Length: 215
Figure 1 (cartoon, one colour):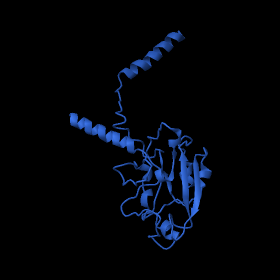
Figure 2: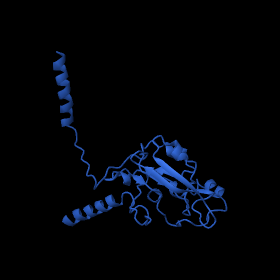
Figure 3: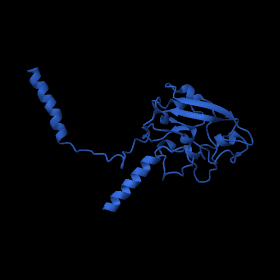
Figure 4: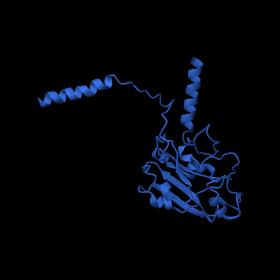
């Protein structure tokens, strides 16, 4: 009797799905929209004048349970200034072959330099390409921003930057919910570096143009 009951229960699951609406995702031409708080690719944010928010403190690397982040701090000088204050990240790398997207790194960041976007297209053919460098993680320059190194434009000390962060946040305002890619922001040109998502965006645009031409 128990076997017969189990059989009917199994067929019940099958028949219940037969009458449900089929959901088809046209990926990669129409990728699904992720949840607003989805933990995707990291972003190194900038101040409104273009200076980097990262101060090279390495707290994100210490907080990472997967040892996926590597940071080397450098000293700012009046001739070569990349961030407010004394230090900046001269080397910043995230190994996405190790990253578990837990978000502990962004919790540890004292300057809200590190946030997470909705970008999830991170698959690569080569494991070496999964190690994202600082140039790939830095937020693109928005209108009014200047490529570092340059002097501080928002005040005479780092206090002027971080006290006014709530009213003048730079790229960290909603960056964790912003798709970072061509068409959204102005992408910086880095020799030998391909911006994450650029190839996929070009393929989607070409496919959409092709469909429009055929129609």
